[in-house]
Length: 172
Image 1 (cartoon, rainbow, N blue to C red):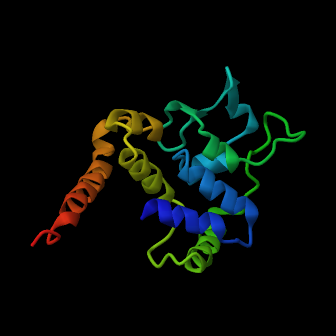
Image 2: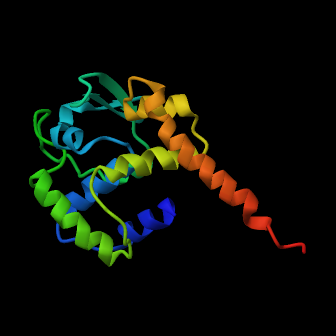
């Protein structure tokens, strides 16, 4: 369901394009809203063609080095003439961001509780569902303890249970 929801959000216009870009960027890199707001162009580095973020996470105060996929890069705005100290995303307040997200989600056909923080769940679940291991996913999220990431593994295990039961009743 996560991938279908992301496709719907990508296809649905939003009133504030910067908020849409920041939200989708977050879905593909896992940064918290506080880290997205604090992200500066000086945090973006290119190493042998691989884009990376070097940030100190607001919540944990821990530095992380986060490689960016082409899908994440797709949602980053163009740098243009901005300096290393300029923000990557030009965003309104967190409260206003969450107000903008709700009608966008509804327009995309998503009828569940929807906030910016949910993108971290989307990112983690997507990584584990697509085959990333728990430890790597934990490091990508900036978790200091892999136990914090195990909650997402439970979601993936439930999906496995659902998958194997798809054949039930087919051969009666």
